[in-house]
Length: 159
Image (cartoon, one colour):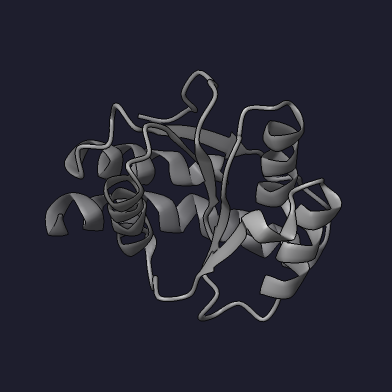
């Protein structure tokens, strides 16, 4: 259930909101710089992130043209983010989308990919959580280890 998909070229990339230290954006930058994405780069979580402009600036510095960066502000959780990916694929007639999130998030994303019938269209890529020995980072890491299994079970029951 965990792990990322084999990387391949895609028409767009979606970087899920959240995260704790920019690892998702760094992974997305690596993917973009390697030439795997030829279109839109979409950032989710704009409705609750004070640092969305920082994320946009990071992607611009990575070489993504400003015209190709979009923000989806309406999504409130992972299910809504993946539903927006599905709607985007259908409305834009996109064949492949790379979705970037943290490694502990992959089981939930893999489940939603299956439930929403996105297995042919979505390529999951994971960033690694870099551990810095601070109280904040330790708290973040512990919350991932406790939160993600519970969230996965919740999604299995609800969706």
